[in-house]
Length: 208
Image (cartoon, rainbow, N blue to C red):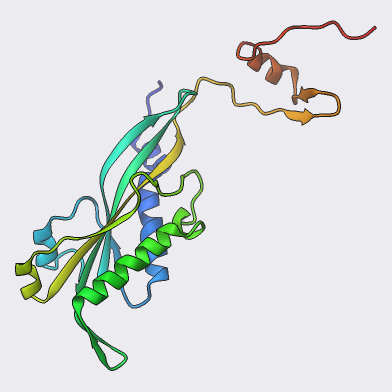
């Protein structure tokens, strides 16, 4: 492993960019709600003081990042994301809507976004769909005491992997299949040589 500068780390970091992409995507898909990024795990006291997210609003944070090794020597990072939802009663279309309804509607919308095969990639490449085990989940974060203060808190949690990080030990070459001839062709002899130590096979003499 070679040394790397802080500038290079920041340039190549994909986690911060993913949080920004999640925040901007959800913000664009839920109008009239403020969606902000949060640097970590929200403490309920922060929500009570409304120093992080104001109602109606959603804060996008994460609680854990795990490394998942791949067979080729590279790895993925599995991120546990959380969308913190703050809801209060509101007047919508001349009708009062209670805070619980607002919170459930926002939480259901985030779950719908996570289920969408396009939106859940946040406009990025090199990431995997949200994990189905455990599946994305909506759960309350408030107590009866919190409810008496006029605000309800919910959290949508999901896990999603940033894939193909690090340098694998397998050669990164690709061949083209020619089914009629029963062979795989490579762009150069060097590419073929790079694979020879990894593919079982035998040499045959060309037809005379």
